[in-house]
Amino acid sequence: MAANPAPARPDYARPPLGGATCTTNPALADDLLREGHRLGIAVVRGEPELPGRDASYRAEPGRQGTITLKPRPMAAKVRCMLISHEFIHVLQHLYGNLKGVPPLGWGAREDLLVRTGSAQEAEAYTHQNQAGYVLQLLKATKRPR
Image 1 (cartoon, one colour):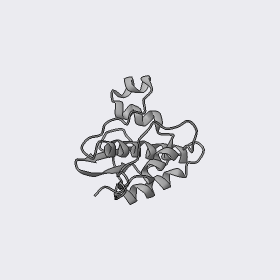
Image 2 (tube, rainbow, N blue to C red):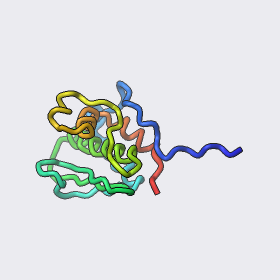
Image 3 (cartoon, rainbow, N blue to C red):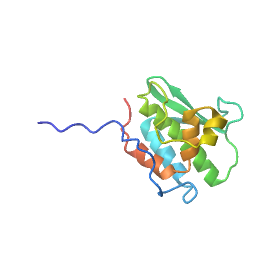
Image 4 (tube, rainbow, N blue to C red):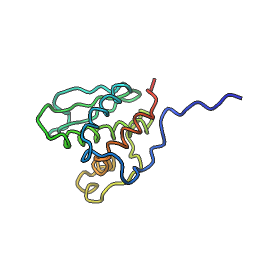
């Protein structure tokens, strides 16, 4: 009897307490970018689609999307959280089987839900410092075909 093939994506359970964060290790940003490249996520410098934003993830139906990063100086910790935030949207897109961008079920701070009006955005803002966990999930993800 053949073994079950490994799933294309890991279990997107809520991030555990502790772990590597942008606050403690801002160099995680570069690791996230490398994993994104392995998964086929395009990362470009330019003006994000949403006005006033420093980054955006454009989810493409049926395929990986594109992260756009505004080229501007910022602290390493801020850059890391910005990149981690966008990769949470990548995980949401993968969780939605590249057809949508549903929340992962990690929960979000109430004030962020009110401010953003979006469960997906609030979830990404709430957990953007958890770059080590985001990286772990990306590493456990097979590249979509």
